[in-house]
Image (cartoon, one colour):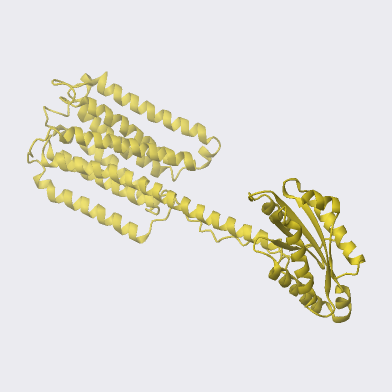
Length: 484
């Protein structure tokens, strides 16, 4: 039996045109629409603050439940933000994210400490942490720490990348050590050394924040962070744009809180609102980031599945005979093995038919190869016309074909000979003196060896040729008796 390699095309599977758009807000270019949305958000925050400044000192209605609700929301928001930013850092390795992440981590610790330092929050008299000045100083540390974190992030855009490129993990550890040291120092100042803190809160009145210059220092730090962010980034990326909004909210928070001058004033309430806007801006940036990554992952998974399916189709097409469209040898054996392995009811047997054309060489020599190709196509069509849907046909050589069928053991011989007889008749009907000789090997399905079955069918086919051609022969009576 001879094998003929199929003339499959050598073209590789075409690759999809991937869109290499970054999914990170730290690098993704801000669109015009995003810039306009951010600008309108800044205008709304600033305009609302300016309109309310004349009313800031007016006392509002005390709402005891507001403080724990606000503080809990702020703590949870910064906890989630810190987690998301550090997760983003672990995924990208971008050290500049650690400055923002470190600032948020610092703010989280400060906000928790401030919760514990608020008088009357957990104890009827006094607070769990620090003294009378601890809560107001923690407010200062929180706002300054976040502004400094954003300032460091913006300034890092100017630093030499070689400073961190050699040992990025060491640089990350150093950054976090600095943040941890700053947090410990701040907590020590408001707890261990709270008695030495300058007075900013005078029984609920904190006008001293302005008079002492602490408020001006805080605004200077925040405004500097905004200026450096603009100069270093020009608000090119999505993260840059919304960090700018966050700093505007922080400036307005500081301004109206200080203008309010006391707890439960309108300025104090509005300041708490601006502080929550600040937290929500950072939170929404990274929640949107998660959504973008999820959508891209789903898109990539679908595209990968589609390409895998296309690759499988292409691979099967490569293993199909170009001329007849029938499976080549390897694909035929795969499909035949799948057919044999099916869970058919009862005892099954396999019939393998090896078909060789009679008179084909004469057609090629006398009528040309184009006519020979036409004959091969007609033979393939003849095979398809006589086979059942479950039967498999293949082309394994120049003018050699194979057929596999599975049937109950008791009736496999009758089915195989009926199919072989129809194939002989259909091929003879093609004309030009074409005929075919068929060898049939009958085997038990459960212990079938394909190489042996093909060899036996091939031998039976040569026996048919010796007996006069245009006929079929069954291999081995002993094997036939065993199957029957």
